[in-house]
Length: 103
Image (tube, rainbow, N blue to C red):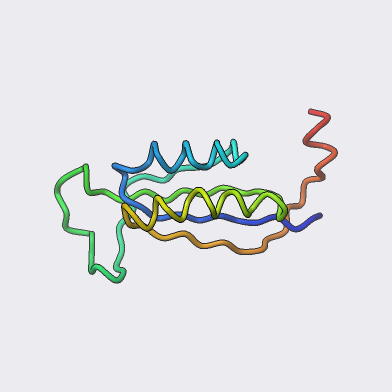
């Protein structure tokens, strides 16, 4: 087991391509996207919006701790300009890094 950084992003689906491109440029090439995310945040509830363009997405990605700085540097301007939020936390990955490289 080893520590990795979990990156969780909630943003407008309209900005999804820009966010995924930013992650890719930062060296984070794997991610999961959950569409049609609803909830209540600083801007209120999004549960009753009828327009698909305004739907939120949840993006989940992981990276090694030493790879986090470029991710933050690339994501922060996008989130500041277009809105959204990003959380980073330490989690344990149970798969060995060596096993990943040998597959």
